[in-house]
Length: 261
Image: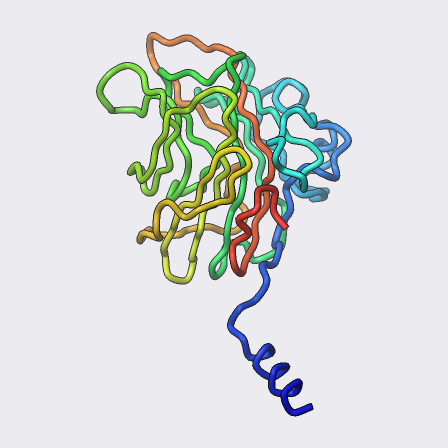
């Protein structure tokens, strides 16, 4: 009896806690991308804010399908294809954009949290290697992915997918078609640090960059799931597709299994 009581006390005092899902953006509740249209500034429903897009209908920029998710992710019913086409200009800007913002009142910008997603490209409608793409970024760009030729660098093309902090590359790999890259940003908003977790396919996430110091600025409604493409003289628009799945934010010990809790 004493042993049982002692064990219970030790467990209750243990510093180890289970991960807690703060926000779920895995598209499981959607029947089609048109469900995104239910959200508006006056009717803030669903997991996403949908307002950064071109002048066309939602199906021109986002489509959902089981074939668009990482096949190793058993927690997601479907994934999303994000498309940049000739109409994907938002609000009169000269940048093509298609982005979703988490719609939540949870504290996704407090303490230590993990922003998860998987990303893939195809041989069909590949992202340009001659233009800079800012992917899954915060408004202040303290952490993000980038692909293609980075503005200001030498040469004319860049085949890599890169993780950046404050515009500096901390990790990169050649972005090959058909390869799912699983990503988690380890963000400590209290300590102003960011680390990077990564794997491919169905492999568990591993920390590949230990946390580095950054200014972790966020109002809780400024993480952009999607892509912003910078224009570049001499390179015309082409249709480009980006695939996302397994999108969620958690706190507590990181979930390394692909797809999440």
